[in-house]
Length: 141
Image (cartoon, one colour):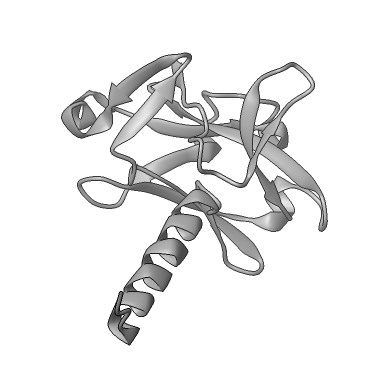
């Protein structure tokens, strides 16, 4: 069996891509002194135990909020409402000072239309089970 360098490189790239896809933080970008929360890149989401094809339901989304330990899990707080930035994504950038103190870990979830709490995807490395038994995303400030 003859193994070429191209074949080895292809396998290496596939392994790295698979590992990366399974080990990424979800829902935010750390910008140093602020956090940019981002929702909408997903093709499917989970609400409760129901898997929803987001691609065919984007028109149903009227509002996206973040709720978490930094706002007492208030899913209707206008200061934590994401803005639509394109046909798919919603985002908001918040100062880390608003979210908590340096080094703290804060749990959060995205909430659609003030009602539908989005479960973290399986591949998210920044998911944690809270004291109440719910699985949430988290950020480290």
